[in-house]
Amino acid sequence: MTDSRSSRWHIENPAQGMNKNLKLFQIFYNDETRQQLDPGFIALDNRANTRPDWAEYWPIRQVLLNNQFSDNDYIGFFSPRFYEKTGCNSEQVKDVVTNGGDEIFSFSPFFDHSALHLNPFEQGERYHPGLITSFESLSGELDIELNPREIVCDHTTTIFSNYFVASYEIWKRWLAMTEIIFRICEENITPLGQKMQACL
Image (tube, rainbow, N blue to C red; front, side):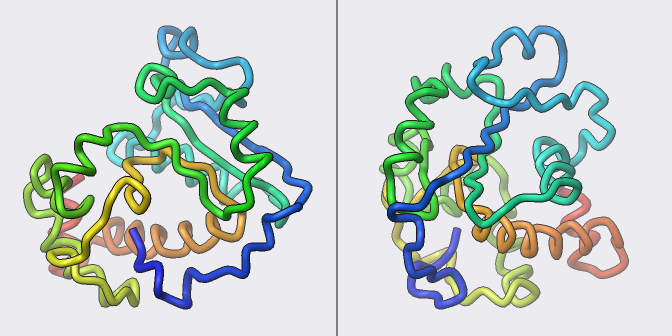
């Protein structure tokens, strides 16, 4: 979650009229989840599951680090239960992204969760106690000026998990920030790293 006023995330809407290349992946973990895939998405095989402690971040990270993308690419990573949770199929997703002029397209479900909580941090704290204090500890490392106890969000500014499609430019920034968190956890040599490692 980012503050929309931050210049760090502001992009002059180059998406309007752009010829977009859609790279929409759907992760599967075994034969059962493979059967749930939408054939309109690119199947992303995570059956090896070499780092289960990082959940879906691991296959997403591998794709972003080990493949070349262009500025015209719009990328998404969905779970095998995407249709079950959103009611959207691949054709609907492609239609929204192709015809839209935004840098990020949210397909996030659970409107009740965004309505019942002040923001995603408060919602996350309910299910993962300690999330807010962990973010507060991380915010300095990430150079984010945002108060998770006060910021007010609604369904237009809330995305749960990875229910979104974004331009490659956004994904590059996303990866740069998540790699800072990844490094802190993997090194596990600071009090913050040890605290974060305990949450995995």
